[in-house]
Image (tube, rainbow, N blue to C red; front, side, top):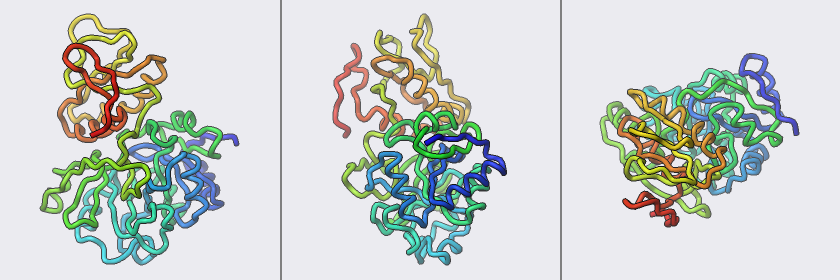
Length: 345
C-alpha cells in the first residue's frame, strides 16, 4: 500500500473523511501527538487499528469527539448516563484541549475499543485540522497515537510515515504538534478523580476548577490485563535503543552512549549529545522530547543516557514518559553507569 501525505487543508480533510467513511484508517494531527483514526462505530476499523499498530487488545483506544457537548454524546449513545458530576466543569474549562476523561461507555461504542470495559476514554482535541476532520465525519473517531505499539509517539507527519508508511493510505500533515506529549488522562468513574497519565493539564489546574484535589496514580499495568486507559504499561514511548535515566546531572560521558541533557555542563562534552533546554513553562522541552528521542535512536549508539528532568509544570508528564521509555533500566550508581536492567517497581 502506498501512503500519501496530504496537507490538512479542506482538500486533504475531504480525502481523509472519504477514506474513513469507507472504513480505512487515516493518521491525523492533534495538539498532543499524531493519532491513527478509524470509525468508532465500526468493529472492523477498530480491529484494523490494533492490527496496524501491533497493539494488544487489552490496551484501549481514545474516543475523539466531534464536539464538546457530553449530554449530546449521551443522547447519541456514545456515553452512558449518569455522567460523573465533575465531567461537565472539566470539559467546559479544558476542552478543546489535551484532557482525556474516563467516562461510562455508551451502547454505540464497541467493547473491542475499550478492552471489554464499561468505561471509555474520551477527548475533544484542540488542533484545527483534527476538529475539522471530526466535524466532517460528524461521528467520533477511535484513535491511539500513530506509531507502532510501545514506540515513540510521532509529533510530525514524517515521523508517522516512518512508523506506518505502507500500512495506511493517508497521513494528514498539520505541521509539528504544539504540545508534543500525550493528553492528561483522568478517571472520573472512581469515588475521587484520579490522574492515570499526567500531561499538560495539571492536577493543580483541575483542582482549581472542581474544588477538590486530584489523586495522581503511578499504576503500572500488565500487558495481559484489561486496562482502563492507554499509557499504563511499564514499557511505552520507547526507542529501539535502550534508555537509561540519571539520578544526578550527567558529567561523565559514556563512550557508547548518546546523551540527552537538560542543562549544558561546564567543560568539554561528548559529540554525541543533544541539549534540551527548557523554556520558562517547559512547553518547548516537552514539544521536542520525542523528536529528540528519535534523533538519539537514529545515532546508532548502544544506549541513550538522559539527564534528570528539571522541576516545572511539565515535570510529572516528562518523568512519566521517560520512566516508561526506560522500562526500569538501571541509573547512575555514583561511580559509573550500572547498565544491568532491573524490573520495574
